[in-house]
Image (cartoon, rainbow, N blue to C red; front, side):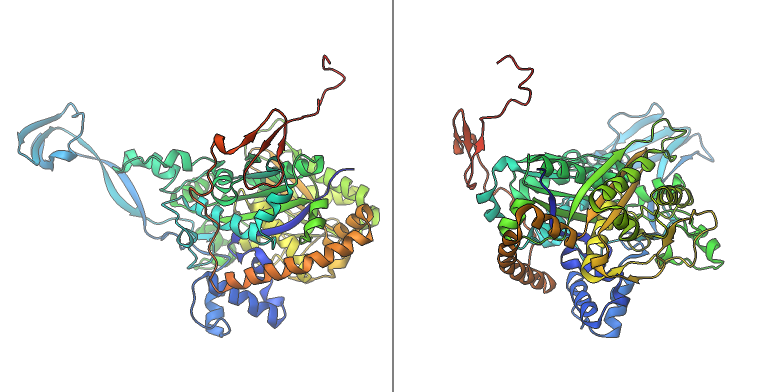
Length: 618
């Protein structure tokens, strides 16, 4: 019997705040929540943002609201971006230009029209014949001023000894730590029960680390007079989030990897974790991504592609002279582009037996994730047919597992919903057509990028966090940045949720998460509700096992509640074990049948079954 991948923890940070304990989800629907739940979220955000003011006052809450979710860019000033303007200087009264320059700033190779006419200890005089090509420092205004940044005042690198890490890796350390502690149990407990090779980490970033401490600084150094550092290449790699988690957060010896699929990257990595647990190869898997793309260069790159919502286009849509940064992303409405975001989102998966043995949280389960390419394309960014296949397969699985009635009446879709004119047409047609053929009359559709923007690699994690939050609190976040669905959107058999909708979580058996990635990277995941997951666990393990799980869970819930409170008060630092617990080969107990690793309760077995018994020569 296949193992069920149970979601036992979720953590990280996005533009709505901290993900553990569903704080970020609650920020999405905070206006619809009871006072107590809203107050707890404001407390959490105030602690994260370093605010000392009372989070219960109207002024503080207004500040928190204004400095979370999509808003005007704060990581740099979009009205004052440093630039280099290329120009030529030509003498006006003479055919040469003479100037002095510090000797250490003299080019290593003098241009042909340069002559050193006088040299002193520290300065030299140079004569240039004819034209002088130069780069002049300049300032410019970005035509895009909207992004979804993590809450103002929160600096993940200041919470541990970050040593000039790229921002994406700072987010990784903080986010992965939050997810690991969200399970409510010490990781060392798992080391006693799980073999070292039965852990796995799948994580990465779609674009790598592109700020000054990563690839951005590496590529700019030669043109800005800077110096390349020894860290920029290594720390800039796309798979570095997984490497950091293994080396400094978990000390994991298990499987590792980073599957990159543009905007579908989270689901690509989730698929690896699901397949590992279902097959029995792994028992504990950490899955997630971190991305920090809000830099002037990346914004300008996507803007030049025509992909981002520019200020002028937003003003034109509203018929005003002022840009509404808060409503920059408008999925399935009259829109003009997507909105960049940053985030770090991680989940922890256990196999079903381990989840019951440890009394772990049961936030839900991942039934499967389907991935398909687009086939032949007119252009790399153009849409194709692969997403029809992934959504249809996920719906077919839901029908097989839950039945026709559940698929038609007790599921809903978290759409990719980027806010571009192309996406609103193509994705809506996929959902509408497949709802029709599967007999769904009014399929609810949500799109949280309206609040959280497009975080690229972690985008599917943003959607998943909203799914889990809905089962915990009973509200589906509405697409509140829009007033109406655009005329060219396919609406047949669909019900776009424009305002926060209250639901009975027990009547939502499953949710779909859809991702349409640049280049034809399509993925759709089927997420099972907590009550469905528990029913499956009881059918497999029995009622007594579920009762024992409930008893064990009491201590897990208490431990997590204590962690949550410490985080809210700002008393908890991320896990960051630099240089601690480093093992050498001489520390291992090695024989021809097993490898014993210090700190783990079970060895790595070397008596490996032949996977091809009918083909092997034995």
